[in-house]
Each structure stands twice: as structure tokens, then as C-alpha cells.
Length: 252
Image 1 (cartoon, rainbow, N blue to C red):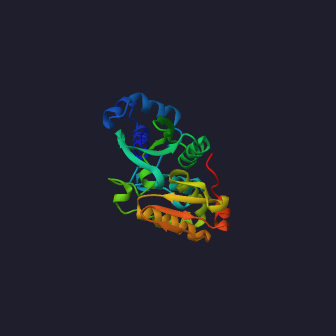
Image 2 (cartoon, helix red, strand yellow; image 1 turned 60 degrees about the vertical axis):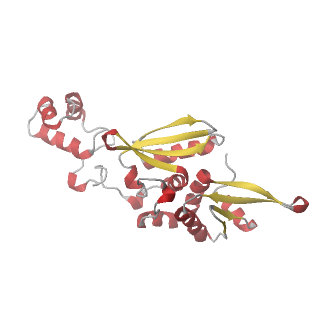
């Protein structure tokens, strides 16, 4: 997978009259790959990009962060809840979300969100022990889309949303809560004396910053929440549970 500036440079050399073999010697790229670009144009999804217009982080076209689809906000919730980004060869990164295989609809929704946000990225699923599965996607752009990526565990470092991420959350707080609860929360039936039963939502995370992001999204929807240290947030009031049901509901 070659970044746009390398494709641009190879085609520019071809326009100057160099053949694929000569370009290969100069750039180190495979001659057959260059020949395909010359004959058929740039690879699909990788149009020629002027290096001055490329993202300095991943080399692809500069990202229009504010134009990302609503699926991004849901994926952000999944990532903050139980996701990570790891480096792979050739400056490619893998976004990995750990989910429960007992909820196949959530697995499918996660895959669809990855594909919607970065349609050209390769994604898949790997089963793990104890009813777990990794839903993953490879791209050079993931650290750009999730600037919270960094060394160490998320609860051991500061997690702060960028300005453009905050704008997405303000527009779609329900989608962020949906992702957070799908990854690190649940809806359950709370019981009391005399057979009293009532649904309740909980979100559990070790990171104080991520719990704060969850609570701020609740505030945007007018949801009352309570904290049970060290790591649990509850949404319990009947009206608040009913409103949250519109965005989340029971896991499936």
C-alpha cells in the first residue's frame, strides 16, 4: 500500500519520459506496480495527491475531519471503551476493538463503522478465548483519526478529545454513548425488595478521562448519571433509561 506522494512521484517521473524499470531503480518500488499505474492510472482509492496537500501524519490526502460520517462517532466510542491501535510494517496501523461474540449484531455494526469511515481499509475478525473477538482494520490513517493513540494503556495517560472530535460528539452524543456502552457497558435489570424490577445502564472504565467523556455526553442529552467509584457510572432514572434506549437498547 503506497502513500499518495509516492504514487504521484512515480507518475511524474513517467510523464518526464522515464520507463518503469528506470523509475523502479530510482524509487525502490516494484517495476510491475509502476507499470500498472502508468497503463491503468493510480490505484483505486489512491488518486494522485500533491505532497503539499497530503496529511503530514499518514501521507494520504489531508483529512476533512469535520466531514467524517456519523459512524465515526460510534467508532470513537468503541475505541475509547475497549480499542487500541498498534503499529505494523510499512507505517501501517491496526485498529482493534475487542467485543463479546455473544452479541453478533454489535460485531457487524463495528465492522460496518470501520468500512464506512475508511472504505479502502482492510478489515476482519479473529475469535479469541472466553467469548471474545477482535474486530480489526488496517490503515495508515487510524492514528490521525484517533489522536488519543499513544504508548501505554489508555488509563495510564491523558485522554482528551480534539476540538473536531468534540464537535462530532456535540452533534451525535447518542452515537458516542452507544459505542461506549457496546464496548464497556451494559443494560441490565435492577431488582429490589418486593419483586421490584427496573432496567438500568452501567458503564465501567478504569480511565477517569474516559468516564468524564461518557458523563459529558450524558449531559448533552440531559441524562442524570451517578458515579460509583472507582470505575462505574450508572444511568438509572426511568425517564433517562427510556431516552438512552432510543440510542442503545439491549445488546444483540
